[in-house]
Image (cartoon, rainbow, N blue to C red; front, side, top):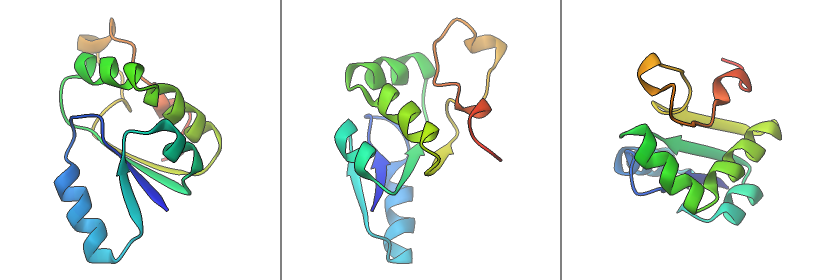
Amino acid sequence: MIAVINYGSGNLKSVEMALRYLGAYFKITSDSKVVAESEKVIFPGVGEAKHAMDILKTTHLDEALCDFAASGRSLLGICLFFFNDTATTEIYTLSLHDALPI
């Protein structure tokens, strides 16, 4: 099953429409346990990094995503947290760009 991360931001509708078109089995979730049990994760990012990180920390999805990435399973991140920009250097992000092959 593919977990699509719902953290109150991000382009969920486009991801959902694409997955439905492909006939994929997926669940839109904000539950870190569902993320841990998934075969693959899609992390749609759109929005302001600090606000998104606050939500991820509150829901423990930050830890779940980092653990998932470390497991070697497939993680697709879209637009957010995979780069370091001088404008965001004071914001803790997931820093997954070093952990994932391109």
